[in-house]
Length: 308
Image (cartoon, rainbow, N blue to C red; front, side, top):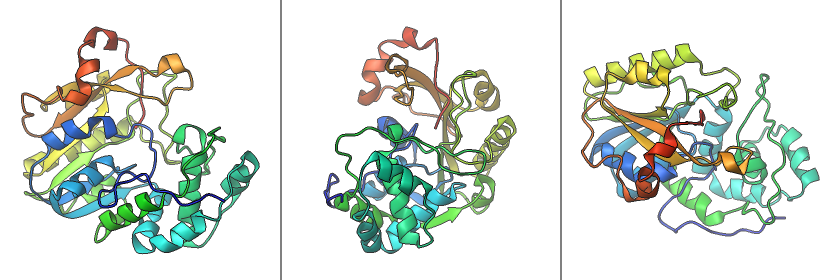
């Protein structure tokens, strides 16, 4: 059985889940592009929540609304927020082996804490920390061959539970959840990325695909937020479609490293855009964490990516 350990600082929450395309590399530049003081912070594609946790640690917002159409993800956050002790207890009972992994993957627990423990376990022990489902909405990531995965990180779960206290968590469409956003609020969008090639289509976070029409609707919502005085920021892949949809807004191109590719030589720097409804500061895109990749922009002309 996994023993309880702690990798997180006791009072500073770090993301609970590994998430493809997570924003840990870009936290500094994204935080610098958001207002210093936020009334209500919205993150409608919350995923691993790296930006939310960083803003929470700095006390940048009064309220927060985190949402996603991935029901299992949101239910996991709700269970951790509402009863972290029970989630820890369930997680500590899950053994780690390839046989156990596939048995747990095939299970469908009814108890909320047990479902959350299953989600965390599969995230920590599945291949590359991926979350992927088939058309029936069934999780289908294979076993990851980790020697000693940190499955039951008690300190991290407790700090996440504290950060989520009082947060509004919803399973909702991004357009619906933002109907109440107003001046003084801020929104960060990290949607499933537009794929850059036919071989980079990793966007199976939900059984309903996020297609070109959804990205166009997202661009409409983005523009409407700006007209209402809401500070909105968006990340996406740097491709023709996103340039067409968001080219009328201030944007910068950022080099990032992605490790989702099954081949090690395909895990190099890729290019993303960061879009804002308001002017971006002159230093945006040159944060220290990006300096090494930014010094070699020519290597980014052959872009690969397309995931969140």
